[in-house]
Amino acid sequence: MKHNSFHVSLLALMALLAGCTITESSSWVSQPLSPEQGQPTAYLVGAVGPDELMPATAQNQRLLFRQRGSEQGAAAIWIDNGIRQTPKDIQKGSASASVFVMPLKPGDYELYDFQFFSITSTGYGTYSSSLQAREKFVVPMRLEAGKAYYIGEYRSRCLTSSACLFIQRDRMARDESIARARVTHLPDLQYLPLQLERAKPFILPEPAGTQTQTKDRSSQ
Image 1: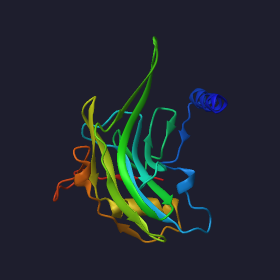
Image 2: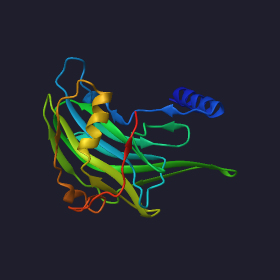
Image 3: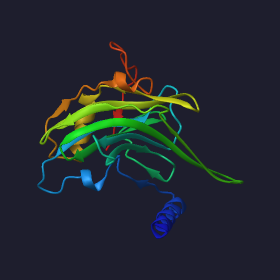
Image 4: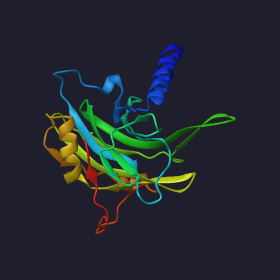
């Protein structure tokens, strides 16, 4: 484990010296939940990242999922720490978001937590900070084989350093083309309504009728 950490740190240092960044995946799926080639597959699609309004400044932001009844998990990820970053598929000013496409074995899953994580280096040392929901929640979803489900865009906001949340919006028309460019064989995307009242006050749907005042720019 220390050996792997050394190589990760070495790669990061080399990237920093070269003035370049390392692009990472916007999703992570544990091996037991990852379908092998030819096995039935369901896809979970969405976007995650800081909002334009009161954005969370954490360098690593995640939505956490798990298979119901087990500890096997998956995550939608946004990272930007100056060296490592996920694709900035949607960007407006300093705010960005990454579209995730998560291949999963069909079955029952739960959105159950989020995580904000940062590492800060100063002249006095290196410090880490982490924030998760104070009270765990469970938002169930059933994923069927051969289908792709869109669960929305999740943009982070922080009212204070310890009071953060996600605003959920439907941006399927925008995100589908980005997802399909990443996974060309993606089935037709269908919107999956979630019981997000179970996740209040940590995830709040955008109020009905609210119109975005910004035009998101997609890049690949």
